[in-house]
Image 1 (cartoon, rainbow, N blue to C red):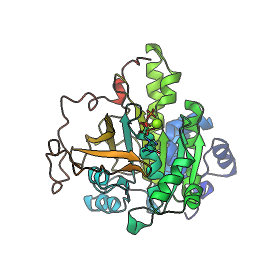
Image 2 (cartoon, rainbow, N blue to C red):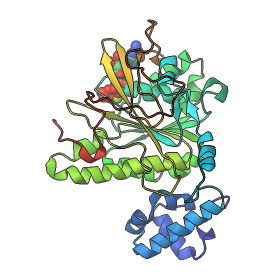
Image 3 (tube, helix red, strand yellow):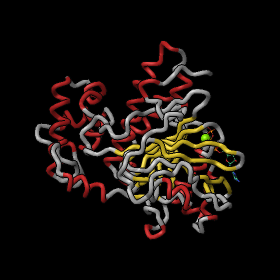
Length: 361
Ligand code: GTP
Ligand code: MG
């Protein structure tokens, strides 16, 4: 069980192992991450055989204690949730919004218009995740999937300096993968499992998650294909975050019409990895030089907005004392388990992956 070798599964011999590794599946965890349908597509095995192998992998992982059982007690879910790590944003205001920081075992989507600070937020998290635990980090490394060529090591250097960290060491712990098209973007993620495990990756950034899909699939006729592929990518992201207890952070630009790519965050996302899936969406808005971040329909964060700024140190606290817009912060921090009602006047809160509107570009 230690090394999750494929040939430790009953009935999986050298021939199957070869077939699987040719298809990019190198260990038992990969089988679970891909699932039976995809396994059959990529390996050429028939559906029954694929389902059978994935089921064996699932059983082995359950026995090894690496995967939640089908029926679990609330205590066990609670225990698994205790393992969720939080990564500080380096600011009081955004940590407040996130109830401590960016969570592992989940996907957080940052969406907003150009210049709203999505990329700056990602850069900042690349630095803070490396901090020691007592300073709010996870002492982890980063995998940064850059689809827009906007990753800037210079920004990492200045953010690291502002946080009193060694810039060179900080850069060393960020692995950047430049994705050239949406298929490549997906492939990078599919091949990432081993790298994530071996390098103690605690933060997985995709900036932007949607851009390439959007530019490649234009027009109404291609919308459903785009959705399908994008769904696959997003689900893979969630499964990796759950499996490896790392935080996934994806950005999404919105223009005139919102283009948010996943739906109900309380719905368990297809797959048999863990029972609980947490998925958050944060909407960023420009407001002069300041920025506003709003938590949108999280299962256990109060719906509220905070004001933050952008600077040398990445995302920063606003210099004024108006850290929190009191008008919106109706829920108190004392009852964080209550799901806030989505605001009906919101332009973005109700968009789902199922109903991405036609693009204006
Ligand atoms: P798109 O990717 O175009 O959708 O935008 P984005 O949301 O990723 O915006 P990004 O994070 O790139 O934010 C750009 C803004 O960050 C700029 O308008 C600047 O105000 C600010 N910014 C970027 N770098 C610095 C910096 O070094 N110092 C300061 N003070 N601000 C910066
Ligand atoms: Mg950007």
